[in-house]
Length: 270
Image (cartoon, rainbow, N blue to C red; front, side, top):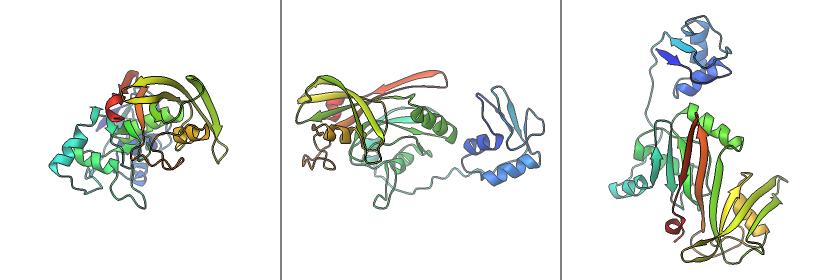
């Protein structure tokens, strides 16, 4: 087997561990030591760097297990609903219009996650690269392999993905456009910009751009600035049955390709 490298990597073993989802790192390192894996067909070490244009030669036949870890079952109608919420997919990632009320990953009280559901729908292992709150809807990404997951996670970490949200509130800010800066309980800075916009059937609507990405950030900042989001039971005790907050648009560049995904907020916030 031969793998052509399309970008630089710091270590051969870590690249291989990302590339082969189900192969233990210890096995990969052992094969490198035995020269069953080489860079440009030359003896290499586990910590050998890779540069664009290199070719990794593998003289070993892996038994790759592609079985999905979850065994959830969805009926045909339920599966169609989630399939219809797929915005885009290619070999590297999938973009969905997240339905509110679903947690992205499993937890102590979450036995079926959105990740589980979409692995069932598209029959492919998925990797979480960012999260939306359970009650937040809208544009969201899953990676389809470890390498892409690492790349997209790095983009999020370095603020190279532009994220825009739309929220609806009962009240209105004093200014139609402003930047909000607050601090959470961990003394971490929270920063966002908002602009008042017009939406069908709603009066106080705001387009939001995040500059930092902390947990519950938009909900917390709107609450701290005395304009909580409708349906936000966590911070304001609002009893409306739907959180009127959605991930509206995501813009990023991956492997020199430009991507922009957005939804119609009038439909999702109706």
